[in-house]
Image (tube, rainbow, N blue to C red; front, side, top):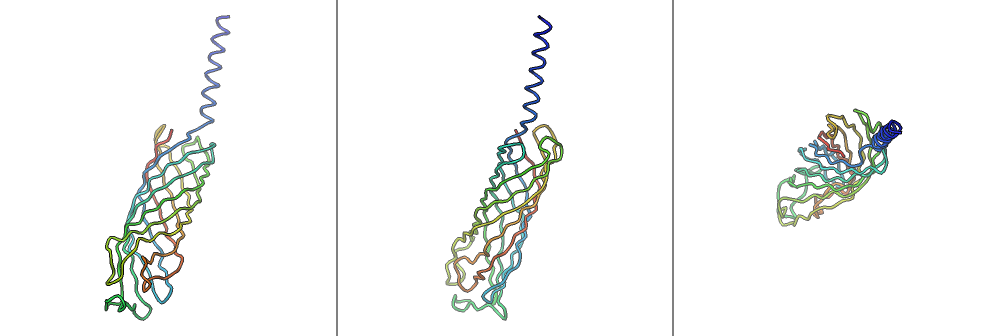
Length: 211
């Protein structure tokens, strides 16, 4: 009876351990450094480009199963949005004589995505994501000549992929890529608005803690 009880307890402990292993990590938080590259675009006689700057990305994930989950992201980067005209940008209505305009702005991203990961309990775990949210371009100056610069908010479709590399029991190294599709910012100034859709490439690298 004594040995039967011990054997039963050992078997139960193995079952509990096995169930816990199959469950895998359900939550993780990560901090990443991003390199953001906004694609050049044009429209309404205006060429638009951006001076690329590094930024940060904070991510929280909750997995509903071993493979499927939701991801919530907040990112911050800083861009100088650059506008030139095809044959010269006309800024005289704004009291300016130059043929180009540069606007420094903080860029905030807030998105929610669906996540699918493979090999949840392996040292290397690839993943893909897709979702949406908003991009907020907040100018650091209040005007362009006589024109008042507005904060520009645009819908953002985001997709991506990457992989987690297990460093310790609860710590991963994360490498990945995010792509954003959105309308190029015009900051409420008709003379520089392209009205076109553009793309931002965002490779990233960081550390995630999971439990």
